[in-house]
Length: 148
Image (cartoon, rainbow, N blue to C red; front, side, top):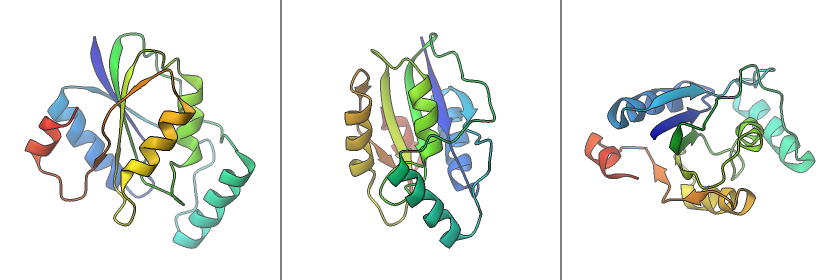
């Protein structure tokens, strides 16, 4: 069994971290791609995120759903928007059979700790085995190696 890194990155920060984690963990990597890209300005991103949270929206994906049967670990990378994962990340997680999989989230947020996000994901996807989240700001290669 192997490890899969899935990530959403709006500005490229999470992408760079995801690529580094995939390299260190010798994992496959998949980028989460929304059909309609999010606006790049901070204000528009916040408004769009809040709207999606309140309406429980699941934005359509512009990608194939990965076959995760060959993976026992899935590492999920994303920024934290309005206290949670971008809803496009939830679209992908909803499409996957996570039963019995070992999951952990890594974030690139400077202001919000990932534990709140990890707790909400664990509640939303209880059939997975959730592990300690990782805030990757300032993380070293050794820190990545010792995680999960």
